[in-house]
Length: 424
Ligand code: 3BY
Ligand code: FES
Image (cartoon, rainbow, N blue to C red; front, side, top):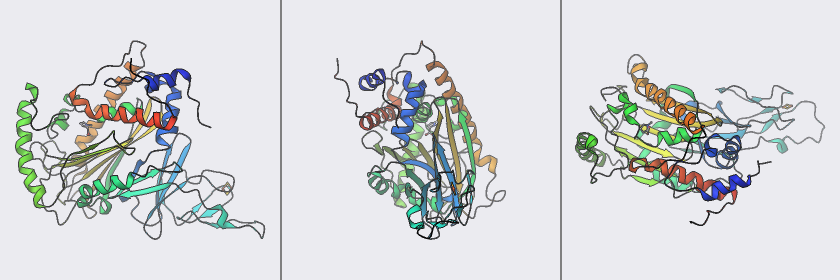
């Protein structure tokens, strides 16, 4: 049974003013948290894993949020399947480990046994009329896009995922993430609401707080190449324009799409994808911008300097890909003030640690950046928890934050049947 929408919350949702951060209850109230779990995380497509995490049949990861748990497993035919992690006998959770490899899924309670497709293959001591076919695991929608695994828990998943895949696949597929291997994965629990984690990701207004990342990341969000930029950004913007012109030739030579596509708040599965130059050596997310992994992700794309492909997808992911590695981020809400941020570094399957890459050099800049971001998110959550908090205005460099918040409000209004209040 879903939590009912309190009248004051219905009013807040109807009346939300655009152009400003959200009123406090959206971030701190346990009821809103439950609405987010029920109406956003249980209904949208969620990024939950890289295919590289489950390369062989039988490899699985489990994804938990709220009271839900899902098994994402590679089947014998090499496709990825997702099932509710709930036994069809008397409901026990089947797999408690976060990841692993298994020939069959065996319930530890009474040993009902399922294959990777979810079929019940064994149930001891049943009547002669017992039909195993009636007790297949309840499946969850699953979709892979260029090596990224998405699930949707709704009975009817948003259908625009096919259009999104068609647009983003040509950007992502040349980087071979489906054939990559995981070099490292980290989990950070941020002390803030999941929306603050997403909002923080969607702007570089705070990027002076990321001196290491800023060596290579042009903080140009919200400006187009013809805009007049603030004085402090002028030198960096100049370098950005020159590198972009150089890289555009390279991208065109290899047929790599690079148009900036911004559909973050105009569709159910909102997304943004872009190909951008990077500063200094322009090759990778290292302190000097030079490669972190000598073996590039794609054998037939031998350019070290490709800049980055970046994608942002509502509600819970973003990624960056350079010529030598992929960096994937997924966000899972744990509590109103606790959010899991999972970061996965992917390199070429044959890249050898200590030979082709040094793990510390590969992960250093983003491990530092993630910690800085976690600190910002905690500060934001603390401030918003005070009765003194009032929603504040978004500036020009916060367009992606605004798009996230607008998408979130539209999604909630649609899913909860709440109309926007008449202005005035
Ligand atoms: O990863 C990102 O896309 C954002 C932008 C700058 C900082 N950051 C965490
Ligand atoms: Fe799973 Fe009984 S609850 S076998």
